[in-house]
Image (tube, rainbow, N blue to C red):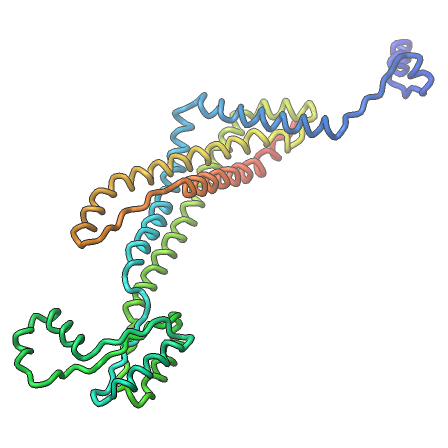
Length: 337
């Protein structure tokens, strides 16, 4: 027994350089290039293995990806609908307009000079002059009272200047309208921007609703991924214990689960893009027919390549984040005894 202990001590005791050379011991060091190559190979292996595991259980993996896709498709469709709504109203006269009604006794030369001065104003984008005759003709056409108006002795309508401001700031528009009222040529000034403000408020409401819905459903996606990765960790608990016993780090252990979450998110994002594209395809025909009835050439814009990249990238990031939250909590709790 004593001889056996001495033999073991001799084999495990530190060797001198001379003894190491005599027994043929070799010291090997791993370079940074080899470490990086090994790290990169492991990432590639985990990426391939994540796809293999995804298709190994297509039913459960597909259901998880479909839940993620539905949660992402709802805010994505709302955002796309809002973008199409803004495109539809872009052709309308969306800028505020100031109607300047001139005195009937104003001379034409003074009105022309006043309009030229307004065109030189840096706050004014466009000035359109409407003569009393043009105003009367438009009124006859719009009201349908052309025959009744022909019997009048004189034209009761004044000349009008339609002023289009450059900006839409309320304070600046009010200041410009007040300056126009102070002119001796003006009879009254009407600032028409109420419907523009209503349209802007409606658009802002839709934008905030889409952002709020996107935030809530993104939390739902995170919870789905966290729960799925937690189940994967529990199913591979024994494997995790074995690799930790042989010296694997937590970073090495959590890497396959991170790639699994990334794959879930990426596939869910692709399915969400397909769902939104299908919805646009189903609605494109009725919307085009309705637009044609109103004499408009509006067509629905579908989710293009940029939309695909953004949706798939955002979904993959959510999947990766959910996987990280799951492994950060559960991997560290699995320790060999």
